[in-house]
Image 1 (spheres, helix red, strand yellow):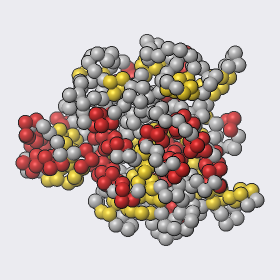
Image 2 (tube, helix red, strand yellow):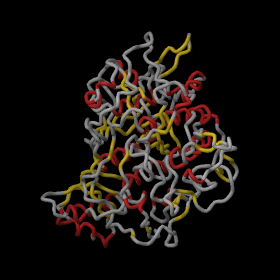
Image 3 (tube, helix red, strand yellow):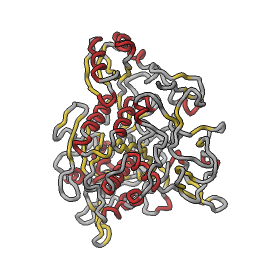
Image 4 (tube, one colour):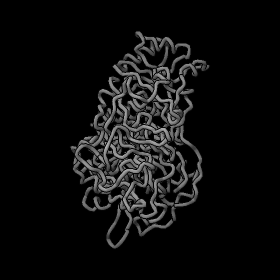
Length: 566
């Protein structure tokens, strides 16, 4: 039986204080959209039918249905079958619109011979070295749950939809908004899905020097499954996103899906285990799919990592920028990149990747390009910043790792990505190396594709966690993050000096913690506490199913949140 969770009265928790959603929508004039969970999809559907509602979505991945129900029947629905039914408001997914870039990092309309522009990020993380060795994602399928990809017969489509070897890479398309699987169902009118997919897999090449050619994408021979869950304006719902994940899990073996990219983020309104979208993401991880999620674009403040990046199991990615130069000495953590820890005390993000002024493919007629034409080169390329792009880069790296070693589990991939990451450091007054950013900002550091592929570490991620027990509701977990009286953050319950990765692996020799960088003297990564009555976060707010969403149907989930170029 799940232990009750007690949240803190500390100021950094205040942003996640919750109000009851269902009373707020009980006065609606017509039927309302709900998520109804029970012991099975059939039980949930039976409960909806018993109160005269209509089932709109079947969500086996979380034992639930989507439904429209008369507000006056919600109480009867909740009590159906002896209170065995959980009822949640269907949260609206809403993209931020029109942001306005600063103009820095604008794409110049020049091409290098017939091969196109050099996007640079593949070389920046050493993926180009792997590509020259034939490690290019071949035989690995990445699913992108997004706004779709361009399907207009253009040159852009060939870069996204065709592998480097010339074959078609799109194995399946599903529109979870309309519940349609068919060719063309994944058409992208927004531009966001095309952009992030191209960052991961574009087969376009740039001639850099002599005969040395560089692919624009990280994994140019990977295959794709396209799931469209957001429309041209970046709008969708929790129900549509969860139905997309449900379809991906159900078709994992059919298409060989090994990686799932989730380049969107919503503000957490509950603990990770109570959020139905997070439950679906956890089920995908349990099914053997490497889930890569963006941290969100609500930085630089702490406690801003969003859903589903706040799921402790998955690989959450923040963004760094190279200041629009090729000089590595001016690289920095992007100010918009969301920062941990999570409400439950986990260090997030796990790592960072290039996310400032990232060049990717996008049609000039896509909604984002029409809103921000100054960032389109007038041909094929659009420059965009965000943790969405950073997540796509890591999804591409995961495909390279799985091609090289198909036996890797999701936990193995996460472990090796973190073990091989390169933390940003600086010299202090004593000429000793210290972290330039805290672990809550950069995680393990900057992703490196070559080192991740050839890493040998195992068992250094998600130690102490159990996704089966978590999903069953028997035990939930918390990390070691805590807050000092002065407002800074640290990782509790550990002693010693240096960066301890796990019991046998020392991370980043010679780099030491400093008290003024928000952490304690040492930490063990992903070594989890189990939530219980005795866990000392405070006792001012007792968690219950009545406190799930806020005012219902109006919270924002960002699929293409616009941020200024950095």
